[in-house]
Image 1 (cartoon, rainbow, N blue to C red):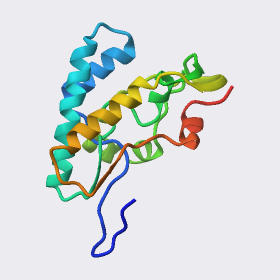
Image 2 (image 1 turned 180 degrees about the vertical axis):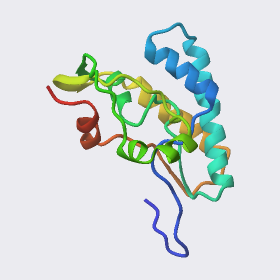
Image 3 (image 1 turned 45 degrees about the vertical axis):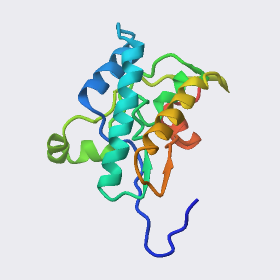
Image 4 (image 1 turned 180 degrees about the horizontal axis):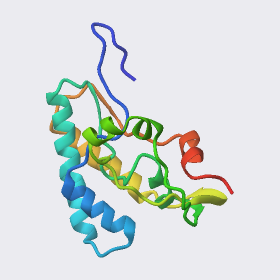
Length: 168
């Protein structure tokens, strides 16, 4: 990890707004609708390159992939880790969106796919490394074309996973 010595290095956390066409492709996959897997992966690849370039152009020193290969900040783990099943019928509404409806209306819909939230129903085990390997490869390729100080791939903590996908 690089230290801020001459100035404070800038970064951010969380998902970045995904392009509408990418959101539509991810949504189709998450809902089990027909979609073209290769077209989706190609679009993620170019979208990551674009968002990394935009971050550098905006002056961000420590860039990320924007979580473009994931449907949302935490529910993506259900596709990579076994032990999650079923569907929580309760729709999660973030308190700030409910408490400030005028602001909510101004900000528009979230820039991530509203996926179903399964429950944790059994022991967890990492089952699919191909998705994280693809995330890493996309970010590395994007970094070959820019001058960023550092880069990272956001990952959901066990705490947020437990908050969103309740343990049964």
